[in-house]
Length: 477
Image 1 (cartoon, helix red, strand yellow):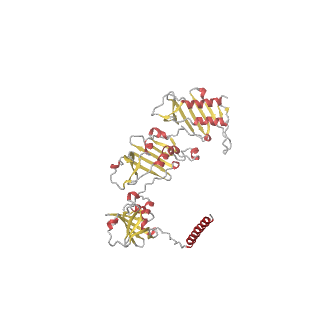
Image 2 (cartoon, one colour):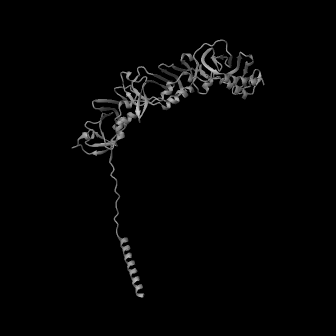
Image 3 (cartoon, one colour):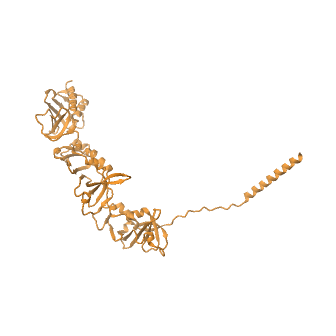
């Protein structure tokens, strides 16, 4: 028994000794340090680097066609100096002539077929002339199989280079791509003229009132007033600038865009329907404006759906562009009545001395006196109705009901018969008057005239009755 125990102890001692030796050997063993493998990165170089203002002219050659550009205060096409160009796009197109980063694909073209790289012939050549007479020519080749790079050669250098596809895309911009398509920001607050002429529809034409003719109250609020010139049946009516912003500018400015050029310098506008535009849109303001002509509409299939587009042209420019038709749907369906202020007259209570209302029923006659505070900088009033004093807050409610008698619809021109049912006359502090006559039209509406001119619009009986009920209640207290 004792012998077996001794044997077991000896075996365990040998195992411990062997394991200890292995651990000691492992700890003293030299482990080789592996150097990290650096990825193979392309070597980039500044192939062209000079101040952009040193470039005076650039010639773009595609086959037999050469398009020259020149830089003075801005870039322009030498053959068509009147063409308005997008200066940012032109600058990006010619950028490789003053700033170009590239990597070398082949150090030499010896034994290489340039046609395999799209360089014989090239997609295009770009030749730049510096102010000091130096000349630089770049030849753009085909795209690499992965679509991320383009081959390029610099004249006088034996190597073939690679440039980003984004740079090559800008180099390939055409004259149509470079045309300015930007619309001015249209602000109705500074409008001077607004006009829409359409086939087989009434013309809409408004012009800005002079400061002498516009309401001082509206001017104080920064609202421009306009006079209706067309349609003739509504001539002389007043339109506020915010009505145009709500009716046109918000829809037009936010969603209408001019897309690509359909023709850069066409000699015949007939194929685009612009020899007889279906709509002529004009907007002028203190800061400038826009005058657009719209031609034929057409369809494009996009993701299996037919989407309508239209040909459009800036009136004083020769180019024809493409634009989405959808934003025009609202504008093409407009009529002048949608712009007319709902208020028949907009008279500030601060400008009124008193108001007389003569009704065919004498019981509804009213004499409303404002009685302004003697100090001009104090807007308090001490009103009366038919001689009875009325609280200022109550009178202001009644006055709002009066001036809010609005245009609830328009009718075909007609001549009112008989005498008016009632007449409202605003006697102003400057000695002038505003006179509105209301005639029976049917059981629900009154037709009316302003200062003797019919406006071919109607006011609801219900709103008129509400005003009289409130006013008579205060007068009889």
